Image (cartoon, rainbow, N blue to C red):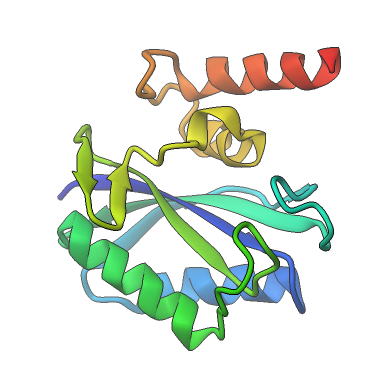
Amino acid sequence: MPVAYLGLGSNLGNRKANLDQAVELLKAHPGIQISKVSSYYETEPVGYTDQPDFLNAAVEIETELSPRELLNTVLDIENKMGRKRTIRWGPRVIDIDILLYGTGQIEEEGLQIPHPRMMERRFVIEPLSEIAPELKLPDGRTALEAAKLLRNEDRDS
């Protein structure tokens, strides 16, 4: 079964309970097996900054689902949990992004894998490096190397 990595985030309501519920809904899907779940990381919003801080996590899964089926599944979970898409990068009860799916690259309408902005986002790379430090990322670095670089960039700014 292919291995995929998901990024989760929440900044409305009980953020921890929202992430816990999303993980449970992923676990409940017959085509998904969760291998690892990172710690939860509190992070400041990116893009649209006039909103509460986020709680973020990364999840490693094995899945029988195709990338498109996985996308439909995570969108369904977001909808079930009450996600409303009003402001780009705005507040949300839950956000589930497909970061990586196997070693493949996909560029389709509404689906881009690897996630196009994952390499510049510490709130994605930090939890990913916790559960898969040696994972090779699209630029050839490991998740741990990418996390160290982003931490250094944050320190320098």
